[in-house]
Image (cartoon, rainbow, N blue to C red; front, side, top):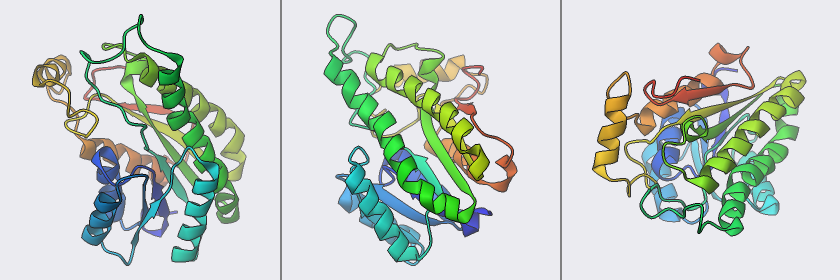
Length: 254
């Protein structure tokens, strides 16, 4: 299925990386569902920017299955077709500030639970809600958002990194389970992105240090990350599933 034939759900699609993903899929001609939890104004502004004929904002907490089911019903009613592609981008509130992070002595299980619910439960909910429609189409693309910190925990964000590691495992097991249905499941893992809401607290010196460490000598942008998500949704990746593509300027070799 070509990109301009797809109906794409971007969870957490109103701000930061999510907004870059929404714009990228919209530019490709896809119909885009901009999911938000609390960012209604940003979501509605983005829909106005991209065009209300092919873009739709829907509130849902992805950690709540009933809320996700309502999102899928609203999208089906709006576009009169099933969602073909899900980009699991939603992130429970998190700030990439190494100085303020909880360390090994102070972090709590509640911190882990919050991130696991956002990453793993959120992806499980959207996947299960999407499966009937994808099976109806005989086609599906599920793209999860990971992090290069799993391979290179240069800053030990324990809860966030553990949740993304679990999400990588889920990505791979889902790919094995859903491949016979024509559904691919892949992950795009970024490094520190310049700049999103989550990375806004990162000191400029850290950006400079990372840039100097990459072969490209610069920090990846949200738009560059979104390009990789387009690849996994496109026909060019039709034989690719269960993979983790690291998009960080070559800092981590996967």
